[in-house]
Length: 425
Image (cartoon, rainbow, N blue to C red; front, side):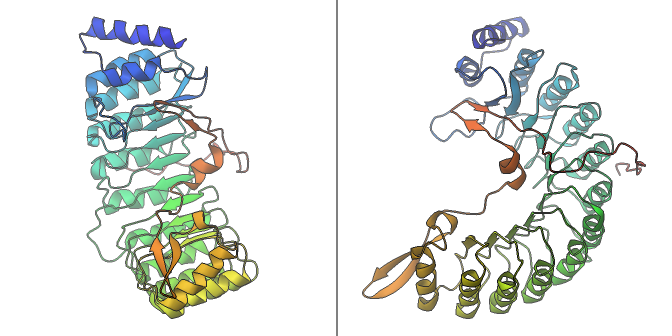
């Protein structure tokens, strides 16, 4: 369907349904886009201009326009005013046999339990959607349980983001159970759940999952309240895992002992390439443990963030020395630690020599009165490993050419498996 046709159809739907035309949607549909693999970018937090945020009525009109449309394969409606009703309209679109949507970004809307339920019900029979992002919606424990049950049936979804969704211990454990048998998901984000137990039962279940899962590439476990005990449990499974490449552990309670357990994994694990330990408290001893692992031959770690970990000169110098031995690690982020002059000089030399590219670290050296200092540069670890590896998208003001083809490097899905009963509480 040509752009003009979509735009005219949108106007006609608004007239028929008595919906006021949203200029933000109208402008997006009038933009010149490619003939296929297009993601409509309708975010409500536009940086350059004020936009009219979408509500449920706008989503109804938009979903009507996208029926039988093979050009638009993604919808990005973050930071709008979409509620459970709007989620229902999108669920109806996903249930259409003609649906071509491969990515749906609903982050930071007002979707709750009922909206998560209707979305999960539609995905039980959907065979096109690859990415669903619901972070920042308060779907709570019951909504998450519905999504976990959906993963027992859905064999297509590759990416699921549920950060800051108020998940409870029951649903977090449910995802760990489902991931033991689900072989389609590549990226999972369950950061910042609401866990009131200090026993860290979830870590035991995720350890057991990692020991048998062979398809998960990216796992985000930030703000889980994980202690060194939880890290010890988690690393037991990581030692047996040979598929995970990105492990996000930011904003937890990991200290030097937890870093030691993780360093032991790095000495054996042949696949972990990116680790985010920012905003923990590993201190000098933890940094030394990690540096020893990085310096060992065969370590494949490429990107490491230890920012804001109360690390002083000894630990940061050991990390700089490890980089001179192992040339694989080429992204390092250290801001928020104690950057004394020996550290400043060491990292200035790493950058000046080309060993550490300036765009792959978060510090930049400068000199005043013969002394070297480091300033902060706003670089950080890439947020998504799986998407950046399989996405060749081109971003424009209102539309993105989104081509996320399945990754052929992973084993095909095996249909035969037994469903685990997961009932919402």
